[in-house]
Amino acid sequence: MDRPRITIFDTTLRDGEQSPGCSMNVQEKLRLAQQLDRLGVDVIEAGFPIASGGDFEAVQKIAASVRRPVIAGLARACTPDIERAWQALKGAAHPRIHVFLATSDIHLKYKLRITREQCLAQAAEAVRHAKSLCADVQFSPEDATRTDIPFLCKVVEAVIAAGATTVNIPDTVGYSMPEEYGQLIRTLQEKVPGIESVTISTHCHNDLGLAVANSLAGIQNGARQVECTINGIGERAGNASLEEVVMTMRVRADRYPYETGLATEQIFPSSQMLAEITRVPVQPNKAITGRNAFAHEAGIHQDGMLKNPLTYEIITPQSVGVPDSRLVLGKHSGRHALALRCQEMGHNFDRRELDEIYRKFVILADRIKRVQDSHLLELINDVVHDGVAQDMKFPPAAAAAIPLPRAAAMAAGAHESMPSRFRTVSTPRPGVNIFGEQHGDQEDYLWGV
Image (cartoon, rainbow, N blue to C red; front, side, top):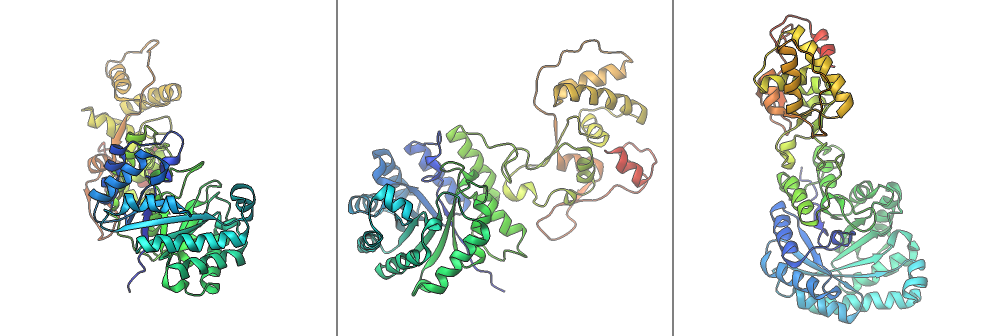
């Protein structure tokens, strides 16, 4: 059965760039736009042309050189913004003017200082003007989730009548709950005449950590475009993370039966390029793109991963462009991971020797947190020569890490065992461990802890 296609609207270059410290120059924006093209996003929001000369130039250059996706430029609901956006976009193969105007009472009263009636008229007129220049017009009622719902319905109806082709529903301040946001999308579909002729979009912020959940709730209730950013960057706590939205739909297709056009193996390269350009590192525990997303330190986890990666990984690292999983050597590591690293370094030990190395390893790891190869070599040398290292000085260091496919192959021999997105590794023969010693499966499991 055909699955509904979700349009991926990437706003890394516009909303994402508004993150403190994440501004980009023209060449950096162009480089990242070309990577987003390789990633396969459907729409690139290239910037806010009236904001600065640099932003105008960036949008113009991206429009001229990145030809496959739609290129969007942001404009407030006023003539100068719209015309400036069109000047930047008119060279695009597929241009889109994205018009926005706040609709919540708090924004109307304190920010815009206009009435609801003025807001309604201004929104419709802005869309009409944009439509006279560009066939593809998107409208966003800013702060939609805090807008009076009957008034929001009136605004959406008016901009559709004026020619909008996409209506985006922003959770501008990350206020909404998933069930609430989903209900809002459903209500608009039920109440607004003509809404079946346009694409409904989500744009969710992460102030309460719910941007991805809200976006998915919107999709489940009829939205067919999702606005998101690489690494979830954006104003304040950020936007919905592109990689999390896309991989959730891919991994849990049973709950989210939708398709995207993304080349997901370009996710990690896109994340790394953004971090390099902005010099803002990805948090280690970030889903999908963080350095710990496919790293395993706990002995129980390492033991399971060596037998079959499906035990602790629901996504293969290669499917998102990460080269390998890693078994990180730290105080929670088990003997299996330690033994494999020793083997990779050319040392094979019997059970007694490994126990002694492991005992010293745990003491050291508890002191310095992460053990790298130079530290491990000193421990090995100490045990091999029956010496006792006195007052060894270990500098702070990054973790020694074993790329999993290589380690697993040493342990069991990696092979593809099912025609799915998951890579599996065969389990070692019962009663035989990687050191050739005889012991039962349960003992092997406990020993790996």
